[in-house]
Image (cartoon, rainbow, N blue to C red; front, side, top):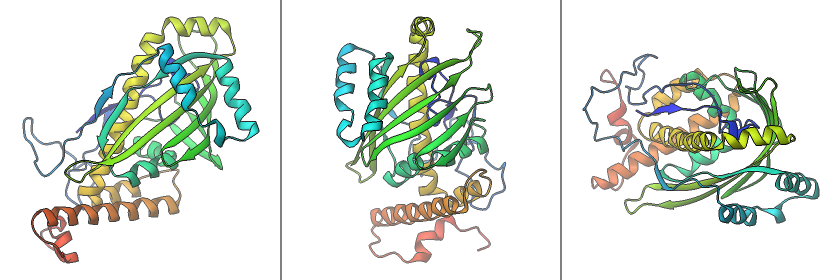
Amino acid sequence: MPRFRLRIGPAAIALAAAFLVSSEARSQDPRVPIGAPPGADQPAAQGEEDSSYPPMKVDVTMKGTSTKEALLDARNRLPFKALNDEQLARVNAVLANNSIFRRLPQIDFDAEPDVYHWFIQNPEVAVSTWRVLKISEFELSPVGGNVWNGQAQDGSRGRIEVLHRSPNSQLILCTGEYKTPLLTRPIQATAMMHLQTQFSKTPSGENHVTHGLDLFVAFPSQTVENVVKVISPVSNMIADRNFRELSLFVRFMSVAMQKQPGWVEQLTTRLEGVTPKQKEELLNMSARIFIASRKRSLREDGVQQATLKEIVAPYRAPDE
């Protein structure tokens, strides 16, 4: 299974909460029997393949870049017409003082659109999942509307606000401070992220995601800006890698819901800082995706009208 490496990067000083977090750990493997107790997530023996599971991978189809051409294109893509006057003023303030720009890699992967949309709209559930899986100790709390507060263990903290959301676009504004051993004081900054997503189907009928993210960062201090620009090659690499790992997380959860809804159910019981409604939505989504996946598999085997018993048969415990 994938090994997630989510860390805070200096280029995203403003704590883009659900995107740049710290720590690393092997995630729990969803390929465990339904009803298995926590801790029964031992990976397959080295070299052993399970052909019933699709590959757990994402593809970088365009590398990250910080060229002037990419910056101009990124500015032109911003959804200015969808913003009100107050939001427009805040966006223009970031653009007027833009210190660092990065177009993160374009990444392609198979995943269910419902899973993608749901975690984007409920980022605190993703962060809670990371804590359960020991991927990260990052904390993210909703404070009303489309606003969240985030905090890392090192004391870095930020406020994340979604200014605009559509089926294929999301504009996020982050303000906060980042602590680093390179400087004696926390760094204040504002970051703006424009996530753009396209959904399609593969020739085999799998749902497919293609997305990319443009990142603009503004610093109030010229001194801090100069320091960050010096280390930007390293921070760009970290931001690019984090975006890939977050894409892999969506892929991971999508496969888990398709193949092991019982594991998802166990995971849900361990989530903290998540409302009962969110837990119910997560379970219902997992059930829908599991049923749809099984129906596709049965159709591939020539079964056109499957019964519920046929659908769940491979996932029942032996004593059932």
